[in-house]
Image 1 (cartoon, rainbow, N blue to C red):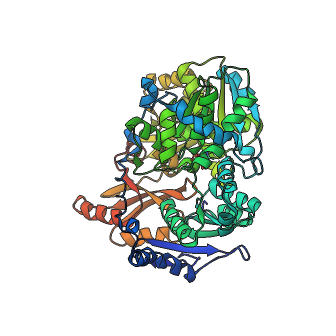
Image 2: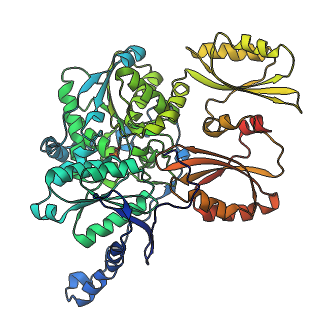
Image 3: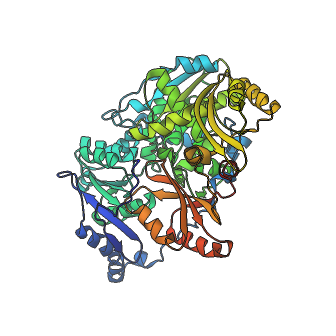
Length: 610
Ligand SMILES: Cc1ncc(COP(=O)(O)O)c(C=O)c1O
C-alpha cells in the first residue's frame, strides 16, 4: 500500500479496446494466486455488443420493434464542497420530513415484511449491542455500539448479499452470480456464494490492494481485476452478467439487499427494548444500510431518529437530500473507502428521502479520532467507514449538548490494511482536539529558544522541527503540542502573541498534515515554481506516466508522496513553469487523467517555504 511504483509494471496488463469503453483486465486463478492474462475473456466483452442487434432483426414481434425507452436524463454533477455545514449539525433534512408530508411509514410497510422474513442468519450472526462506557462517560449520554465489525467477514455487507442470493432460484444459482466491488461487498458475496454452493465472479478495479483480492479468492470466488475505477469494474460486471446469465448482486440498490441490512434495525429494537432511544447513527455510502435500518425502525419505533453520517468529501446522500433528487459527485474522497460513492441508489434515495432525519458531516481527523476511541474502548480497530457513525454521533452530541439519552452508532466494518494505522494514529489527536500543529517564526537571537520553550510549557511538545533562515535572520519552528482543554491552547497562543512571537495554528490545513510537515527545511529559491497536489492511482507505472507527461518539458523541483487511501496516493509536486506556459501546462495536466489542484497560493506554503 505504501509502495511508490517507480519501476515499469511488474504485472503484465492487457489494454482492450472496443467501441464502448477501454478495460485493463487481469483474471486471477485461485490455484496459483497469480494474476494472468486472459485473452479469451476479451472475446466475451466484444461479442455481447453484436448479439442484441441480431436478435432484433430476426424477430417479427411488434413488441420487440417498439423503440426502447429513452435513457434517463444524466444526473446533475455537483462538488462535495457545494454543501457544507458545521460538524455535528443535523443538515440535509429531507424536504418531506421537514414539511411532515412524507409517506415514509407507508413505504416502510412492504419492507417490514421483507426484513422480518430476511434470510441472513445462515451466514451472519446477531451482533452484540455493546455499551461504550468511556464514550458514555465523556459525553454524558448512554452510548451503544452495534458491533457489525464482528461479523464473519468483518462487516455487515454479507447480510444484504446473502439475503438477495438466498432468494435466487436453483436455476439462477446454477448460473452463478457476479458483482463489482473493491471491498466489503466482495467478501460478502464470496462468502454467501460459498455457503450457497454457487459460483461467484468478483470484478475489482486493478488498483485493489492484493490483500483484498486475495481474501476474496480464498473464499472460492473468481477474481477479475478490471478497469482503473469502480465504474469500469461495474460496467464489466454488468456486461458479463448479461452475457453469461449470471445474477448481478447489487452493493446497495436492491430491495433484498436493503432488507438484509434492515435486520440490523430489527436487532437493535430487540436488544434495547424498553429504553427510550434518541437516535441511531448510520454510516452512508450508497445508502443500503441506512435505508434498511430506517425502513424497519421507522415502522416500529417512529420516534427514534435515524441519522446518516458522511465524510465532508463523500457526501452524495446529503447533497441528494438537499437537492431533493439524486445528484452525482464530480469527485469523491477515498479516505473512508467503504463509503466513497459518487451516486447513491435510486431505491435507497427514495427510502431515505421519506424516512431518515438528516445527515451529519465529519472530517478525516474526526474519523481517525473515533478509530482511536474504539481502540481505547475495547481494543478493536475499525476501518474508517466503520468508525464514521461514532464520529458523527459524538459530533452531534457535542453540537446539541445532548445529555442522558440513549444513542446507538453502527460500527460497520473492520477491514483495514495495517499500513494505514500510521496516518490514522498521526491524525487522531488532532481530530479529538488534543493536539495542535503550530508554526512560530522566531528572531534568531541568543536565548530565544529557551524563551520559546518556557512559553509553550506546560503544554507537551510532541513533535518539533526547527530551521534557521539565514537571509531573514529568523528561525522557523513547526511543532505539535498536546493539550487537555482548548483553553490551554488558547492561553499558550496568547502568551506567544504578547511576546511578539508570531504563531499560527495549522491543525486544519491538510496540505501541512499530508506533505509540508515532512518537507520543512527544504526551502530554496526557485524561479517560476508552481506546486500542485496530484492524486495518483496506486498502481505500477503511475509515476512513469506522470513523468512522461511533464518531463523533460519542465524541471521538477519537489516531490512528496503520501499513500492516503487504499487505492490512491496524494503527491505534492513542484515544477518550474513560466506564466506564459501555464495554458500548455494545464492542457497536459488535464490529459494525464489524474485529479489535481494548484497549491502555489496555500497560506502554509507561503509561511514554510517562502
Ligand atoms: C464498512 C462500511 N460501512 C458503511 C458502508 C455503507 O453502506 P451503504 O453503501 O449501504 O450505504 C459500507 C459499504 O460498503 C461499508 O463497507
